[in-house]
Image 1 (cartoon, rainbow, N blue to C red):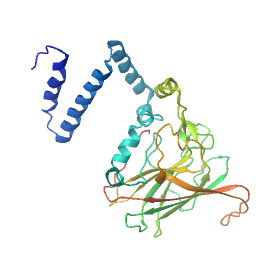
Image 2: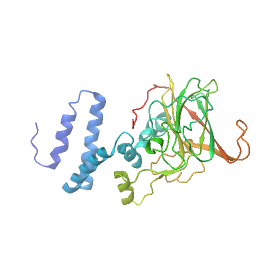
Image 3: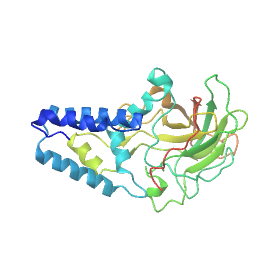
Length: 297
């Protein structure tokens, strides 16, 4: 055991202990973490009071997370970490475009099975009708049959159903299967941009930085099938505000869908009035089909 003589001795002593880690990947991560974390402390000359405040903030963030809210996921997005991890691990190691995106803090397991072309409205949800068409292709450009696809989004007042007691369980959520054409079609209402929660630690940070809390309107997608890396996607509505200033740094060109406003009777159901179509093509990479850890219950 090293007896420390000065602050310069701390990092080598900790790195020596980290080097004893048996698992090679954990050893690599912990050694790098110590190097950069200690470097950060030295770079900003972190004071004792600031360190104590930092530990209080982390404790508070844990207390603010619950079955319907994950503060750490929200903070990771607000610092750009979620997008960085996504883009580093997809699109041929971050060298090409990808339709992979952020999971977000509101994905739930066990979306209800819905027939292709069916509605994901499970309670009265006023708003312009939306007819979505998502096409799923492999890297060769061929459609993927038998893909299990979760679709979910916020309501026209900017709340997911787990945040809003007025919405039915699993409102604006559905699970679909692609056919031979690799297409999922669904009916819903047009989403809007919405603010992330501002009453927690993330909101305090945004206020200190004079940042707005808004996300552009989007539809979430999670698609998986053996032989393919699970696709996690947010398809952004291309007319929405905040595309260039997303508080979660999530928007790339490959994620912007094609939204078109329509009027007159819909060709399938004959309903009249204002309605929208949203189309997007998403590409899956070969890999392991593995579901993420749900950020909420």
